[in-house]
Image (cartoon, rainbow, N blue to C red; front, side, top):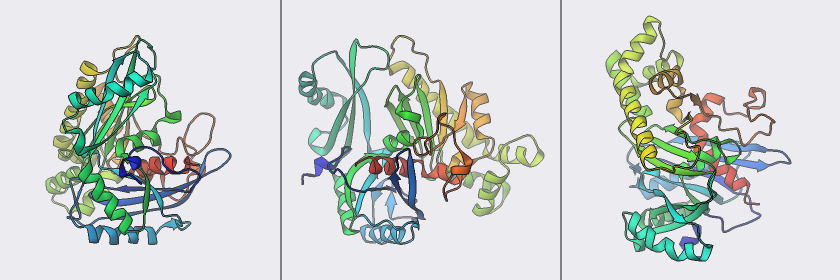
Length: 371
């Protein structure tokens, strides 16, 4: 089987597949089972990775990573994951995602034009990347055709494939993290107006703009992250890292003396976060689609472990003048009429913790829909 057939799209049908999300700091797995309406969470686990195994998305210690993947699967909560097939994430910081606009033309003409446009727009040689593309359904205008192009370095993907197979895992799909995160958080896979997803991960923060039924912009930075916030808080308050975690999630931002102390300690990274959000929104507004009815970013959705900071949504909304809400990673998993979170139906992962599972749940959704 040619490796390029594994990138971004399905090559297997009618098989169970679980989601596998590997980052610098952790490994997460989740498996969903399709029901008549919605899905069931069957198995899940999250394991922290020691420093040095993966750095900036690049695998540095293959043998240790294989061991940690096997350990993660051994300790799965719920039902044991029995299949070797998985939908696997690729690190966002190494992926190139771009929307290329063509005049309205036939699919065969688009296929011929993609190569030339990709060469002009992607900062890599085409023989150094795995390339995939998909036509985005225009959300209001039919005067042009938007094509979402994805490119990931071959060396990076080949290394992940080598490690996964050494752990007896067969990836049926490789997918950049942003695609899985959006699948998890966008109800029904469509929005009437563009939204910005912010994934506040442990080592880095990702920004994903979703419009219509597709991603149209991504960006990732390590300048601000859950880890950097906790380190700043620990240093400013002269406490250890674990104490900082407790204060951040238990007390958070607010108007009491203790809350103000936390706010003052976190103000520098929060300011960096606001500046980065403004930068991403500004870039999108300058370079994004400008169809009839275009109104810019309508809402910001937070996910990742850092999204659990109490008061963060309210703070960002007041600074940005845009509604900011915590994400709902169960919105496309549990079947309900209003796409609202039913606390009584939550599985073994508490809602707050599930925000850190957004990407792997998106991967698991794709795995459950392979049938």
